[in-house]
Length: 217
Image (tube, rainbow, N blue to C red; front, side):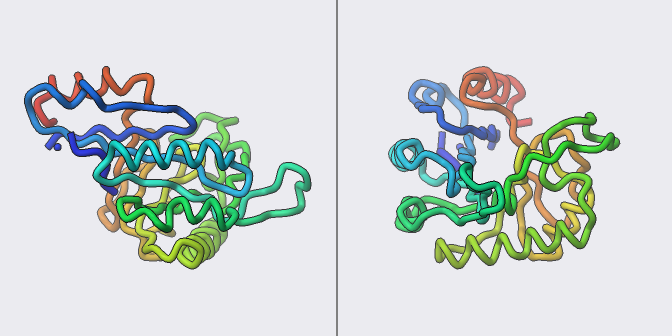
């Protein structure tokens, strides 16, 4: 999971539906890597927005990540779940610099129970689910996204960026290598690499400045 080469310090930016430019941010002295992750290409996402974002990323990044929801609930029929259309998948399948990540199974917005790392009422698909259910969703999701895109799937980005210890176990069991989420969940146990989100487009300039100030920390 690698992003725009600006490249030792790392800033991980997760975003959805926002145009961006790295011009000027990477011009100052010192190597810096900006990891770009776009959520969430799905059956209900806007293909116009998906196309604009992917085209923009392809223009500015040496590589980038698009997180795909394999089995999204349709807006018109709550009982119907569909994969992204062929036209949407083609946006990422044909891009050599695009890494495809798994972004949950259905992206359903469950409300979390009070957990030690999650405030009650937070939206989540995975945190608080049983181990077996999490494993099944991640296994099936990875198989679906891999079959649709024809690309290897090594990164898991949980919907709403919330997860728990069972998520880490399931990610490891399935053979995924990277967990990308916010910094408030449990720490990965070494069986998977953790790539936390550090900013969104609106705070990218501040995050880059902070990373440079810390000198690669």
